[in-house]
Image (cartoon, rainbow, N blue to C red; front, top):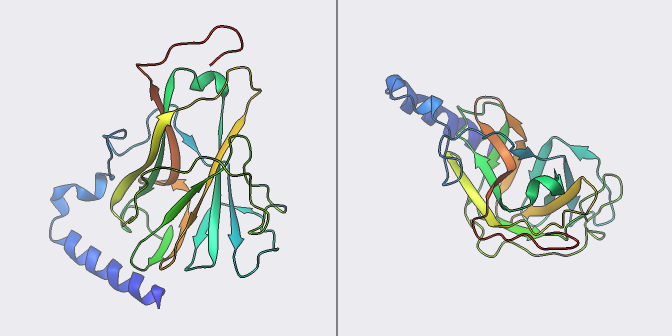
Length: 219
């Protein structure tokens, strides 16, 4: 069903685009307040691992993949991103989900449904481990985004969370930050990539103007 919907959506998009080829919309990647050009700024961090888990196969451990998979009330995907603690000192960490149009990411995602998603955060340093992490054996709980986007549609870029990093400088790198993406009503398969436009989860770091370094052990 979702393949047909994707094909129909693609035809509609192509038809619309063909009437305005000089509008440059195809070359304008979706933006957000921290990604005004739509492109990834220097120092952006991509996922180091995508590990699927399944509510209907709670003890099955999946290998890491370059594809995230979400299905209604079953598959979720845990995403890991590795940070260097030294680079996070005095920084705001913004977790983004870039979701360009199908023309800007051809053959890189499949999507069908009302687009309601949930995000769950895990403890710093926990992360998913391929072949070990399962639905019944998730990473240790952490802080979840307080106001994540509840609907995510193609053609947009979303800020999932933005907050001070809070990673002590004395921790040995890399430090894994992670979370899971699930849905009750939507099918999504997406390949983490940056071909025409960035697609998937990324972390951007920017200066925290209120940050004051601590004495002693660090941040």
